[in-house]
Length: 340
Image 1: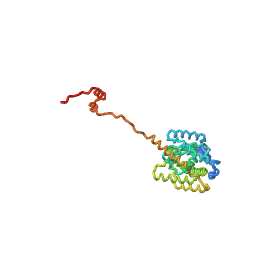
Image 2 (image 1 turned 135 degrees about the vertical axis):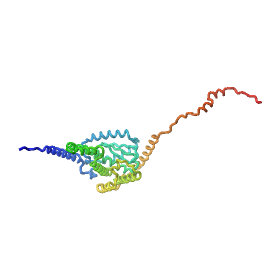
Image 3 (image 1 turned 90 degrees about the vertical axis):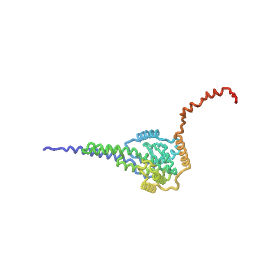
């Protein structure tokens, strides 16, 4: 009796095994943070960083490369007084966070309300954000949010997800009648953010809010000031649409996000009798920053240009005696004429 072998079965089993292995690796890599994120007293002794196939050293090297490009293209504030103050506030928050790498903070001369963190702990904050803040605690809240992104290694985690997603699509190439599906998925990765990553991005923002509230609280600031700054951003966008960068409005301070932050403050952060709200130094630095920006604008503004005026009236020039001829006539002795 002749037996037939199903040639598709081994390939199907191999494909299924490969997908299972990739999914298992996917889950292992992404399950990095522990379950102590709600314990503010354990800040600094817990692991909140997500696992990644990118090493911490590689992440810092990539961030340094990006930072060098920004430093060359952006207008960096170099005033030592302003830089020392903002760095002092940021480093105070960083010391009371889960960040395990050095933090580098620089200020960009840009009127938009924005701040962002590069891979490896390179944090940039716009002058527009610093000037928009009413008190020092609002600045600390924004810095704490960005420090949380670095502490949780959100960039490295997102790159890991994208890489594993690309590997997961490899079996689609060898699956009959599924090449169009592979092409569509690949185009989604290359030309836009897939829907699968939109949830991750929003989740990362929510986690940065959650951790940032703890960090600023641990540093002595009132976490409610961060929520108050949310409202300020909303008012600014309503007053002047487009004033808030699109990268910030992709995860806008919606009412739901504000309510969630308020609930988290009540649940995990014990009330304190006193908070560090602001200092007189904050107002002095804001005034100095406005002066530095104003002086820079004056230097960048082009001054008046003097041009040589050329005579176009040739007739007048020809009829007008030259200075040399006039001088010769003046040298002649006077002539007395007889009066008739």
